[in-house]
Image (tube, rainbow, N blue to C red; front, side, top):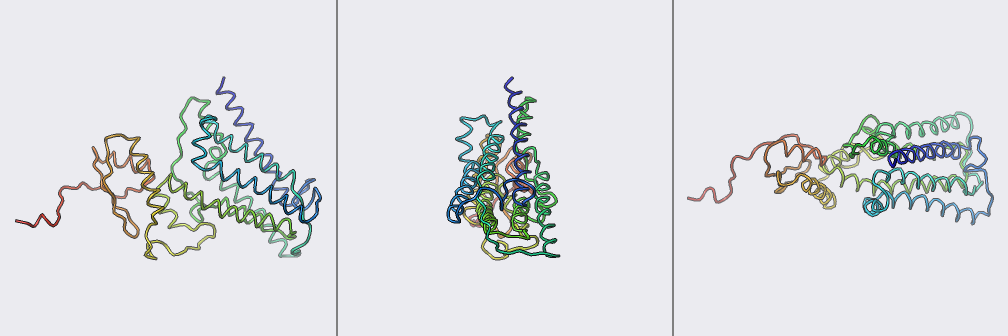
Amino acid sequence: MKRVWALIYGVAVYLFFLGTSLYAIAFVGNLGVARSIDRGLESGTLAAVLIDMLLLGVFAVQHSVMARPGFKRQWTRLVSSRLERSTYVLAATLALALVLWQWRPIPAIVWNVSGHPATVLRIAFWAGWVTVLIGTFLINQLELFGLEQVWAYFRGREFHRPSLRTPALYRIVRHPIYLGFLIAFWAAPVMTAGHLLCAFATTGYILLGIYFEEKDLLAAYGQAYLEYRRRVPMLIPFLHGPRAAESGQGTSPEQLRGISQKSCSVLRRMGPKIQWVESYVTGDKVYCVYIAEDEAAIREHAEQGGFPANRISEITSVIDPTTGEV
């Protein structure tokens, strides 16, 4: 019976999220809803700014804190790991609903465009939301919003973290969902002060969120994500900053620490059949030395850790300065 209730819970949370998200699109676009980013509860300008910033702060803190691995480890002592993602989605949706319910418009006009520029901005607005939608499906929307986890529990199966996938839009930018949000929030033919406040706050939160999210992704996927980050720009398509190999900076100590932690975590699960001796880091490659039962163990470690294993060779002998001594 627990599995049935878990499935009902996961589906109900998803439907709540879906309905709130559809309202949020109408809210940002002022599309026929009673309360929107430019229509609704009235307050003085200073009060509106303070209330809106508080609302956005609640939303940002909930998203950031509950998404961190350390919080998840503590949280899953109280909430089943099978329901952790659905519970996160529920909390996020409640925080979003609070923003939509209590938002205070600030009607002062910042810009007001018409004609063809306005048409372009309206098209961009919808293109942004379509980008968000496509981005969620490309990385498995059901897993992202907790449905796959509760479905696996209902079927009596274990849920495993998916491997790093970078299809379609993810080959152009690393964060197409965030890019879609930015486009949707900034593409406004009529930009009020309240809308501008929301757009600035959203942009700041997204940039900060990407910083923490990429640290988590690096810890989760190791070298595979590091190489992906070198190949693909963060938010602006086709815009590459100086790559580590080209700039001569190499891999940062923080990145190496994340790779090492991920590798050690996998090794503990695999047991004594494989031992990592050390690795040598060059500008764009990492050479690892293992003591392993066979090649399959090394490939298993690479697959579980998200490390590319382009070539595996057996060490047949070792030479050093003492080899030449008589």
